[in-house]
Amino acid sequence: MISVLIPAYNEEGNVERTAAAVGSTMDKNNIDYEIVFVNDGSADKTWEKMTALAKADSHIVAVNFSRNFGKESAMFAALETAKGDCAVIFDCDMQFPVDTIVEMYRIWEKGGVDIVEGRKKDRGRESFMYKGFSLLFYRLISSTGGLDMQDASDFKLMDRCVIDALNRMPERLTFFRAMSGWVGFRTERVLFEVADREIGQSKWKTSQLIKFAVNNITSFTSAPLQIVTIFGVITFLISVILGVNTLYNKFFGNSEAGFPTVIILQLLTSSIIMFSLGVIGYYIAKIYEEIKQRPRYIIREIVSRREDKDKNG
Ligand code: UDP
Ligand code: MG
Image (cartoon, rainbow, N blue to C red; front, side, top):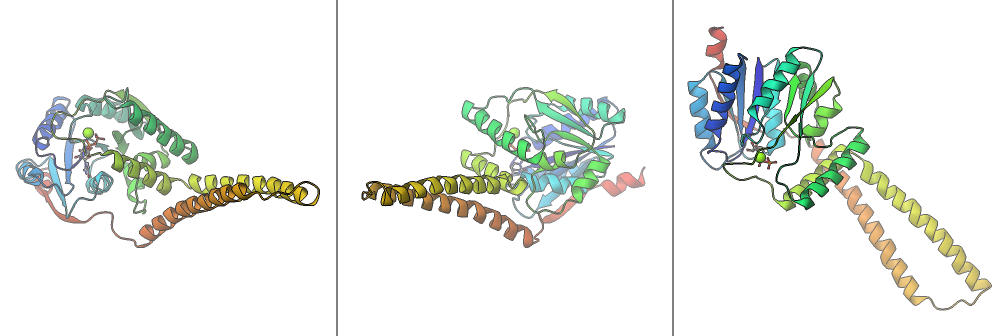
């Protein structure tokens, strides 16, 4: 059985058609499936739609969060709820093609592959800035984390052993895309075309994307700390040269009052120090957040007819 995991936040217009599309595609291809919907604290009728579906159809499980915890938390909640032999993350807005799930499933079914990863064929209608920025972001994470994350997405089919491995990772600040690469396993790729969102809006704002990038870089790699150290070494070397030069001038040359130089150096060093402190502070904040050991999400209720289904075989 495959579990299709669908995080949803304010997707009242999409829940039903996504469930229908997944259901009919799985039935058509004779694949046993379940759909795990996670309502990530939606403010609209998303939860009502989900419960109605879950009450009517034993294929569907609906999980309700106590508030909006973000897509990351919703994906991990779904992974923990999933009962399938494999699972795939699917967006409620159907920007991922349903048929690709079947393609992934067929590859997994043959055996020998634990992760079938969807890669975006092209990045759809994203702005030039956005593309450049995301390229830079994934380069940084990829090179420092030893992962290949170019054109990665959350659209991934995972075998049970991968799901269990992910469920055992204890960190609070998760980054599914990188974690599912970090765990290893035999991975194969399929390309898919990103469709445009038809109903509702993307939840991303530019400010959130920047936050997302900074957060994920700092929770996934310590590279910025190394960069800061390299900064320190470089400024140290420069200060040695300048220091020797200054002393030389004082004793042998014409030592003038280098007032502008003093000011520039003062500004430069203090801003480098402040910058480095900021970076270190960021990591301390991460440690603080991890050490609180709070749950990644809080579930208010789960609606499902799973038991009926188990009873009827
Ligand atoms: N989503 C979520 N919680 C959030 C934001 C988004 O569960 O806080 C879900 C959303 O409902 C959708 C998926 O994550 O199913 C992808 O979101 P979106 O389409 O906004 O992102 P994009 O496709 O633009 O990257
Ligand atoms: Mg989307």
